[in-house]
Length: 265
Ligand code: F6R
Image 1 (cartoon, rainbow, N blue to C red):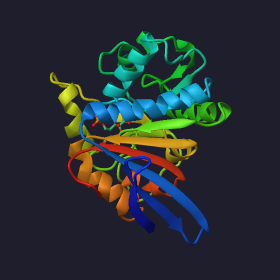
Image 2: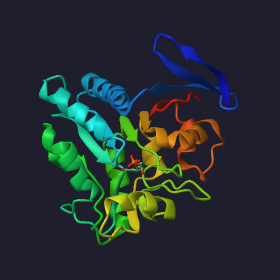
Image 3: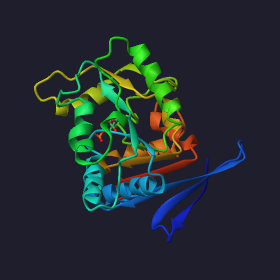
Image 4: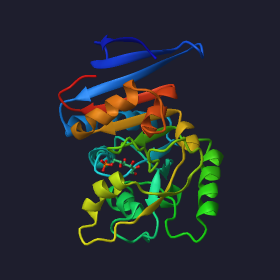
């Protein structure tokens, strides 16, 4: 799948030129390795910032978790300096735990409000997070996919990656699920995320954006810390398989990966 591999001095990055011979298409995937979490966050924030400056009414797909915190801090700093304006931006988040109300300090709505939205000039009515308290999950999820379609798709989707290769809460499976839906969290995810629930009560289910909406994004930006090196390498240099959900990103034609660590691919 990988046609060429090299180092592009103009961008100070390792790049893969991926040639899909069967589809007669050519895809470029930029993979940036940064020395530190701060530098990873800054580069990713720069990419988001460029998107918003070029298209002030961008639809940003956003993620929660430890990985994007530095990006949100950086964007808030640039907002405070007057360098970026979120007034016309719309956001759609990837996922939400089932059973946690918006004001629960571990809900993803609370995470987004406290770590980002409360500190910038975004219109809160245009920040969407699936409702984990909904009574009808099928309806909530179908509405969420329709909303994204109505918005014209996502301009830039920010993604973290789970130790098992999940993106959003699309866990390893025997097939790729297209739709946004209610999912049972895998053992690996429960173990990784229970650190945020020291007193117990880690939800077992979540609502997650499906692959159709994720892949509808015009650009994908995936970030990963050093502890994710092995799974990132597997996802982007191994076979495309639902057992490694992030591997499907190899089929997208505009992906940027920013990771930290000592090792190159
Ligand atoms: C969160 C999400 C998840 C996380 C992933 C990595 O909205 O969609 O896929 O991105 O679990 O989490 P961290 O960054 O905490 O390692």
